[in-house]
Image (cartoon, rainbow, N blue to C red; front, side, top):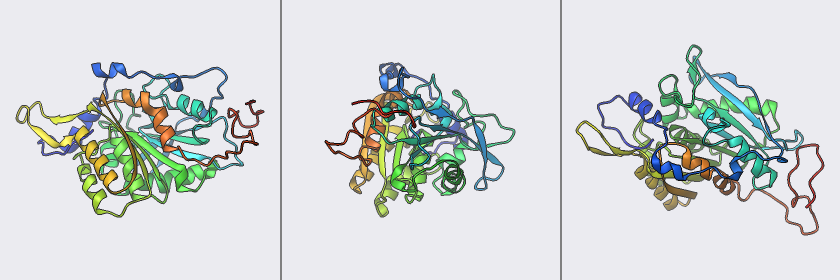
Length: 335
């Protein structure tokens, strides 16, 4: 979701309309899930907990639905890495465009990423509001526009002050911020970046797909803000397509171009600002539209890049790190 807004359409309504367009376009048919996104016999499968609700004091009256993927290799005696996905239901769905648990199963099995506890969290909703679905991510029925598109630290407080303590009580998760990643798509992407921007003491890796660095609630200012601020110790992967929302209006008047509502142009500006400021940044510009098709095809490689330097021994006399990663408690596979 990219662009600035001088539209007469209220910002909340615009955000809802744009977020609801996570539909496939003809150009997205070229993006196919690879073997890393499929389940395979012999690969230890992690377990996903039941969904539960996290009450919020940052946004009183709201609940955040979340569940947790625990890899088969998780050992409570060894601190695990952590990754949190906004709009969690879309990243988790086993028949969806992403299928994140399969990706984490396969990459962990091959030791291409560290053993990682993964949290899927949805935007806050009132107790009587429906849960986010594939067709309605929550812009029409939840607190998503306010939480995800605002640049203040309130949503960071949900993640850091409300969610993390629950996770630390239940799992042995590393307290090192270099072991913590956060990601999302569309408004969930700018939300992930904002959490790391405000709290680099907690999150140092950020994954953004079709990020809404546009003027829904002022997100278009990030490139200038990045240039004007001291560089933060965060690593960022940006993914977008040239067929993302491009800021050309069908009305008001017809064909009017609003550069502050051009998702792809704003992602390019983010890349330029991060690069100029000396951030660790990688990117992929494809031909995709505003959905998760391109992200699904690219997720394995994005994760490999984010975690490319996690500590691993390289001793030719030690096979411990040259075997497939068995489930915790199971005998290690032979090299």
